[in-house]
Length: 173
Image 1 (cartoon, rainbow, N blue to C red):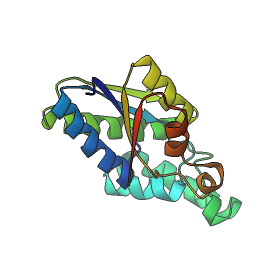
Image 2: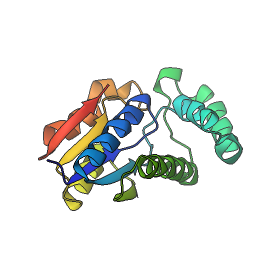
Image 3: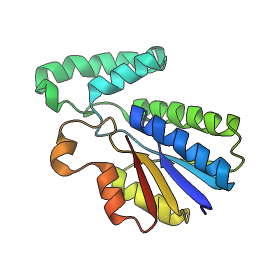
Image 4: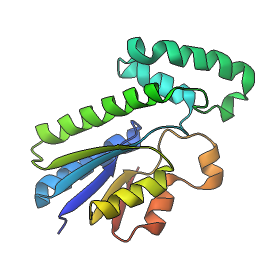
């Protein structure tokens, strides 16, 4: 049924559940699995800091996150914090960790054909471009990611992707 499945990864619980489903579908249909991560430029900095702590990245990205949290707490209202001020290097470190762990999970689960991509830009647009370039016939993604309250007003990435994609989309809660 599916020949190529795209699964965006952002470290959220919903994305992790989506990965499990995408891996299962890829195994069942012997499909190629494309794992994509779009740099978390719009993620809530508190969530990124918590993620770094949980994933053991504190030593690598902790100093930058601590600096940001100190600046953010004075400069912005807590609910509206974002990654403004975080160096691209921190976001790339997080991306490489996420993609590497996800690829290992897929391969250890028996998916033979796995490819990965780390992209930058508008998440919905980049996911859709990747789906088209990779000729995917299914996108499996979390319904909520690490973005902040602004996503509620502007629409979620999964909503935008589902509305614009030409292939089957599965949003996972």
